[in-house]
Image (cartoon, rainbow over all chains, first blue to last red; front, side):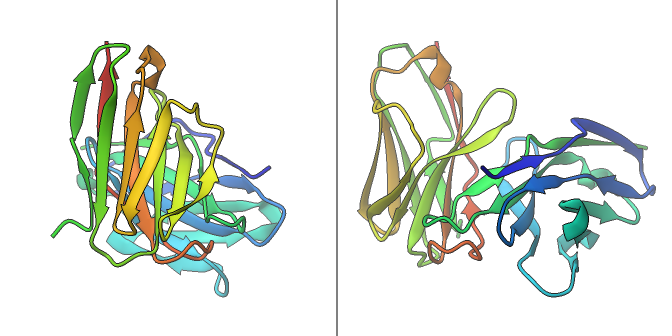
Length: 114
Length: 114
């Protein structure tokens, strides 16, 4: 069965520092991968997605992610974090099963200190 | 205009009651979903509907009954509420039921069962 692991429950970075959030997936077929962000009391907003092609994908708000098939990873990065990036980040894999369900990781809470 | 809207945003009720959560999307999408986010922030799919037809039912207790009067609406009715039903419920929609489709999420309904 497909699964997504986000090893870090919490991460704290200083404003202006770089960020990397880890995501590993387990899925037998070609994965479709997503990163969503959830601000407190808000819904989930799509940051970026990977379907095929270039393994480095760019998203909104200056985020990027790199798909590494050999490591079954899809890590999210940002070169310089802003205080407004504090939120919870979810990695997800979209399955090919009829119905298009997303399987989510447990999330990583990002705290930004000034 | 909100793309995926859920009502109510907050719902506080007693054990044993019956309640409904409504979801509407104005994106013209064919597929709609319900996800449950538990107290540990873990997101899991419950149901998906494509053009009013149920296509995913993830072993959810039959106290939960989704209803799709048309493809723009997917409501969730919960009978005999239990303490364990307390969670945030997210509605989402996507253009079609294929894995490459991006899912757009509502802001969530926080259900508290006392």
